[in-house]
Length: 356
Image (cartoon, rainbow, N blue to C red; front, side):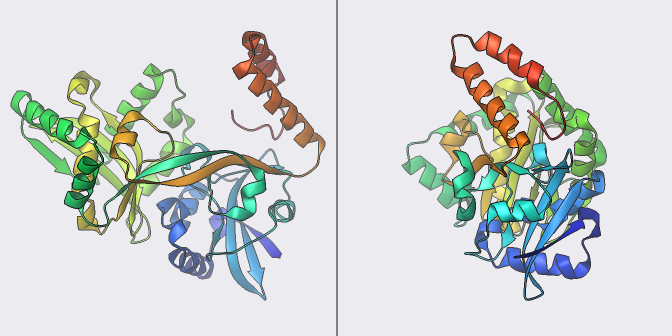
């Protein structure tokens, strides 16, 4: 395995062309997260993005994009923004993950949304989860009929909410994609409020994450396009969603809504409007992302398995990280959870420790 490293900002047209060729030939890489444009958008906002070019006989046969943290730990490109990652390669490609990590000059590569189907990484999986999807390959009506046949009443209930909001607020109007940056900022502001009210970290307070989203919003190619979808009731904006699409997959990324109208579930209405319009964009799948909420259980008609874990080389750092994982497990399960959590917080920090 011949591996050369290049900065993410240095991907030239020849490498991008080969990347797209490999992605197009592998149905498992249909998500926009696997497009070179996603890596380029993150690399434009961060200076720690690198791409390992794996060659055979002088020809690139795979790409492995990553972020370098603390000099020796690799993270997925986009880290907190990434809902899918893995090798960009032809179907059936195999490699030695530890050898790859070593040739990248890393001690470890952490992952949390790795394609479970990339089996060479299976020995390093620590946890598997489904990423729910809505299959729209036969059109929205066929999808809705399949959900009804499966016993889900979610679409019917959403229809009742649509009629109610139209009666009480105004006629619904859906925009599949808006180029308006002001409306993008409104959607992100609603999302920030949702994060803070839920006690979660505001992803858009990081700065670089907002820059990535803004760049993707401005990107409109066949391989990757930003999609700012909006729902109005009368003249009032009631919900927004920022995501991105590839040729066949629309990724459900940052949904948000006007909290004052939560009783109408405007975010759910917007999602179903997206599903209705998806076939017009030749979209076959809406990927809802990892995490099994009730609405996902009711709307999903398929799923992709993603894995979390780490490829680690023997080192003092690996020993420290292993000890921390044990402490974390203790903090979550032990009657002494409070004390374990305090100890875990005190042991955090240092080069290569990563984000928690």
